[in-house]
Image (cartoon, rainbow, N blue to C red; front, side, top):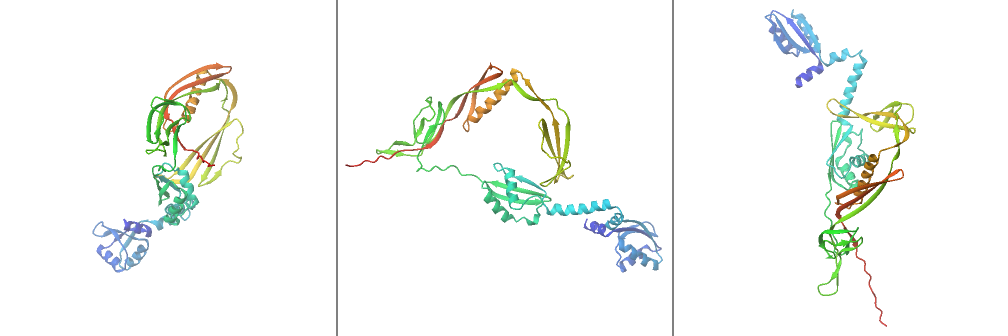
Amino acid sequence: MYRKIVNYLRGEAAVRCCSAAPERVLNLCSVHNIPFWDVVWEDAAHIRFKTTIHGRRALRQVMETAAVEVEELSLSGAPVMLKRLRRRYVLLSAAVLALVWLWCGANIVLSFSISGNERVSNTEILRALERNGVTVGTRALDIEQETLRNHVLLELHELSWLSVNVRGCTAHVQVVERQRPPRIIDPQEYANVVSTKAGLVTEIVARNGKTCVAEGDMVEKGQLLLSGVSDGRFGGVRFMHAHGEVWGRTWYTLTVRVPLTVVQQVGEGQENHRFSLIVGKKRINFYGKGSILTTGCDRITLYHPLRLPFGGELPLSLCHEKLVQYDVQEVTRTEEAALNEGKLALLQRLTAQLTEGGSVTWTTFTHRMEGDALVVTLEAECLEQLGTEVPVVWEKSETKEE
């Protein structure tokens, strides 16, 4: 393989020699240092082989003195191709661009691939790398792993390790997120567990503190569930940090008003198309007007990233914007459509009010008409964690002796 590449770069010439003693041709080539390979004996008087572009000239001079006829069969290789491209400026430019691209692809970062992150977003990692000098267009040799890692880890506290490996024109960023230790409770910080909302207690998991309610009790918002103050073993009062979980059933009644008359888009009209090219972080618009839209117009933007045939990404994207004009008018929708919208809005509001880990166990909807609007009511039963920790507050009494 190596010899084929070398022979292609210096050029190859296939020749046929006619002589009464063909072996004498090979001997003369060896004496005058003329390279030859791929020797084929055609018959008793003809021999065919390959030599270099410069070797064929020396071969002609040597064989003239030895009365050997030399016939050139073909020429090939890089010198022949470049000679053909001398007057073909487009192909010559393409060859130069291909060489430049090969050099850039091995030395310049054109895209990023991030793996290992769950809590930290790709955007945060890319911005941290950019602030430390690693972005599209950065030379691979300019990336100092140790310095980059130390600076990025100081900015992103959720990461414990980072590595940037450049393969081709893609920078592969591998990260390891920090594993947070479990919560450490300071016994000197005294706290109670109180209820955040009214409900029916179904389960109590008390890890510390005095239990003040039992399963099946109804509790109100702010009621004490686990106390951080209890009687001491040898008299007096003992303070502690109460903590645990108190699960209970809760009930919600939520209402939303959904109008039946709404403004909708009708009659899609003229469509306009705009194109632009995004090179790295720069945008080249192929249209003259600005990007400010008038009222009554929707914009649909599609990005088409350019890729190489073997899958490599390029820092080039074609942006296609579709502008659609429309008219607006008031329409009256059906009661069923308004009811579905109201149900969706109420369920989203209910989910937002639940504590962490809570779930909805039962729901029912009712609705009624009020004027030109539909009033939708949700009644739901949920299972959620009721308790939250609050610090213990007490007042020290001072006695004065008269």
